[in-house]
Length: 130
Image (cartoon, rainbow, N blue to C red; front, side, top):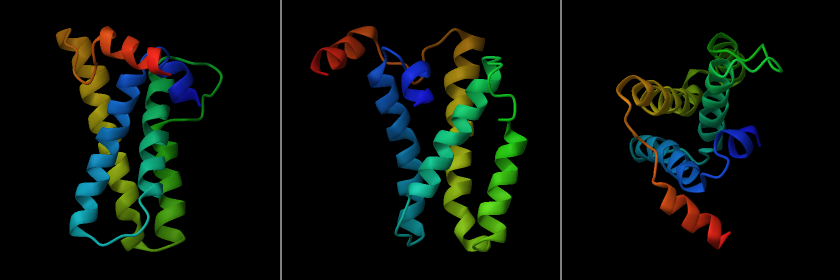
């Protein structure tokens, strides 16, 4: 609830775009590799992006979330539990979150652009529906 509640507060259209971006990466992967359940990759997408944003916001409540810990979790859940073949959806989620973080948070600050940010009128329209 941290992503929806604080990072995308009053911006539901941006959150929907966030979901579509991560899901699109996983669906492209599913076209080439027959997998049944994409939930692990999507949850890893959420977890990695949340960890990057919490660390970048200097939130002092949770200090243990970092890319190194996320990589350790990937190691234990994927390699040790299931084998190398089942790690690929998690790696796709990891890669999608890293690309989203770089474009949305780094490039937007560096070049003062609005990549993956929808206008406030679209967000207000969706808030009016909800």
